[in-house]
Image 1 (cartoon, rainbow, N blue to C red):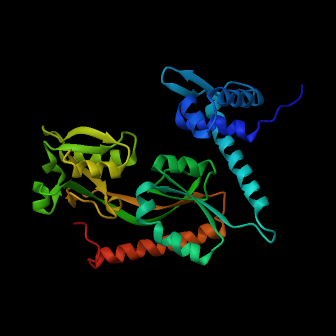
Image 2: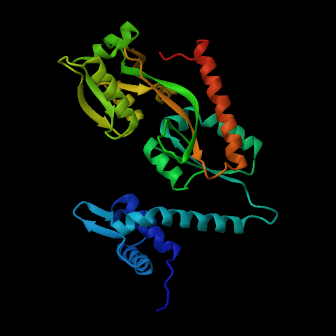
Image 3: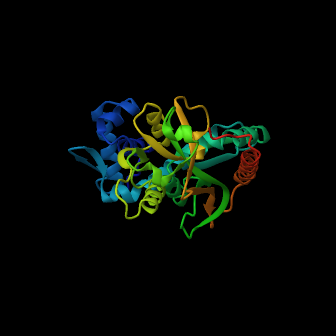
Length: 315
């Protein structure tokens, strides 16, 4: 039997359905009619020897073959795209490339300065930044989809090398004029009866907040009301400013201007997450990744020094 090799466009169709969760949305994303998209998916399935997607009442989901194949398909497409880009480059050498997975709070709090300095040091660099959750970032790193990750440590992954960058304490975000804003600080035990906005279940930040609340209210009635879960910390801060509740968030999330909220230290216990670098033990860091790591260490030291000298205020 003649072997059928999948076409990159057919694989992109499969990935678009997985990312959007529906054939209709994937077709819109790719600028195709739905029948044309379905034909591409069918060709990919024929080439790979089985169904990759399953239609259900709530959209489309990968089959077991699809789930097992997705990481390899993503790597293959990225390698194909990189090869095409390299072929289109002027003769005389390929542009250096760097792929980073970064937790979203660090992406806007730590990355701009180091990336700007990296661009000045290596003007021809091409960077791909994946701003992902902590768990998604680790998966991307382990699958070989990036060279370096900025993540929450420890990762508990034996295949990864880790290096701490900074400690990121949690602060309590409240609407301007709230009683804790007047106090200038809060204890976890004082949150009893408050309406709490939290990160979604399964997120590392959710576990840290939940553990602190359980420790502070052990055996006592009237814990904070756990009423609103959100996927992004920025949403929690915005909702606190709109008067929907209060939120315990890491300090990095408070970078920038946030109207209508005040952030105060949160004590007893003091909850701190550790942010650092991670990379695969079996894959030496490319020169551009090593340079960025140096720049991130410098940025973390600058941030630490500014906090220690009082030049950076929480609120």
